[in-house]
Amino acid sequence: MSADEVQGTVIEVMADALEIGQGQVDIDEDMDKLGMDELAYMVVIMELEQEMGISIPDRDVAYLETGRELVDYLQGRMRKD
Image 1 (cartoon, one colour):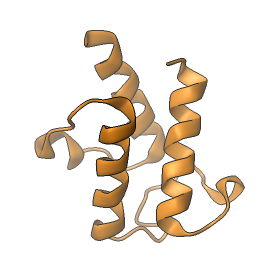
Image 2: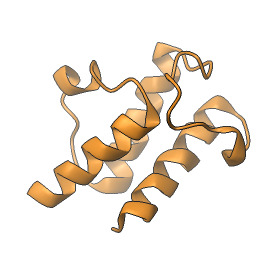
Image 3: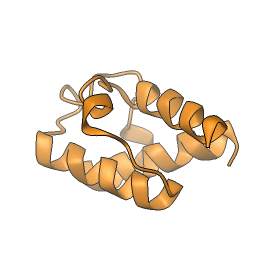
C-alpha cells in the first residue's frame, strides 16, 4: 500500500468515526480537538488494524495523537512486516 493510500485510508476511517466528511478531517490536528473521544479512537484503531492486517499495541496507541502520526506509524509498521 502506498503512502497516499495509507493516508486516504486513515482519513476515511477517521471521517467515518467522527461522522463527518473526509474533507473535514485535518490529519495534523490532535484527534481530541477534532472531537474524537476514546471510544471513537479505539474504533479507528480496530478498523485500521483490520484494513491493514496488523496489530497496533496499546503502548503505541497512547502516543499517536494526530492522524499524521498514525499514518507515519502505519507506514513504518508496513515496511517492517
